[in-house]
Image 1 (cartoon, rainbow, N blue to C red):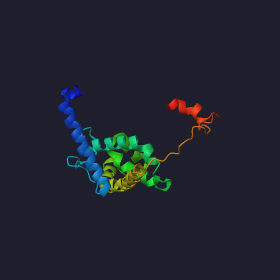
Image 2 (cartoon, rainbow, N blue to C red):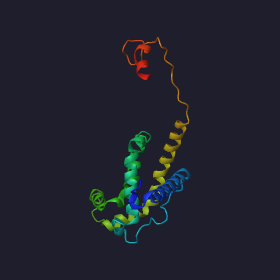
Image 3 (cartoon, helix red, strand yellow):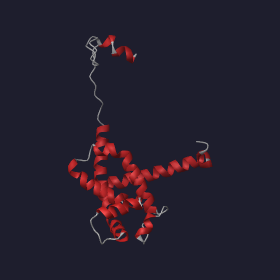
Length: 182
């Protein structure tokens, strides 16, 4: 940690502290179904300016996409197939400003020949708060289920030393996998 951005351990501690504050605030928002962009994260008045590399909402969208990909497998196990289309629609809105090329492709596939990228982007900007809330609801539900499962006691059946080993070797447990544990 000594070489963390040439700031050393104090800089690393500051960054970790800031990340924990952000994590705690986002967790609170999801739990209370009161989601909003954090201070300093905003939309530019010109919808196309939100695609600029340093645009705060673009940075938010990039982080959202990365987080979604990171959690995709665990979330998919809890999202029923019937909600998948709605879930994907919300994801599209919340990831829209991450890539101008992706937004242009979306526009081409939208079957709205007269729409411009600026008009579509302005529409996505208007949908953003509603999509944040819609996406947070299943997130909150999944979090509650995972917490309930985490608080369940672990149950295991004790295997008798002279019982057949569960690995299917045909040997007694004491002469097979029990040996590997000790």
